Length: 145
Image (tube, rainbow, N blue to C red):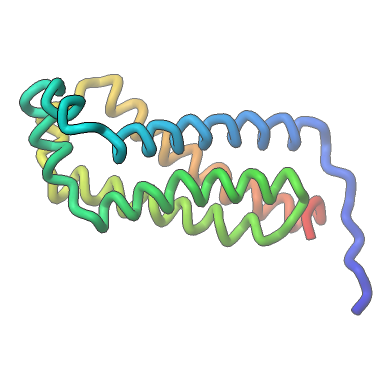
């Protein structure tokens, strides 16, 4: 099988992907901290946040895991110039959408969210969409194979 030629990506591509990898690593850390909270940690949360945390179903937690770890793997694969990054970033985007769907449709999160929370949620969605678009651009430009 002939190998496909990989074009040199601009330096800005690598810098952007690295920054987005750090973003996703922070998201993964937050996820791990949330799912490993001790009963004392949960008890220390404000009442509304505690109820919200205790009510999260397993499928929403799984969607959150897919979102953050798919993003981490997708960014790593982009840095390694592998087209498989597209699949992981698409999965990450689906995880983001499913997780947001839970919080906006099935939970009472909107009652405890402030403007900063809303901005962060919008940023997460925009970044996930941007990563998928960036991966497609990288494939089209033959920066990944």
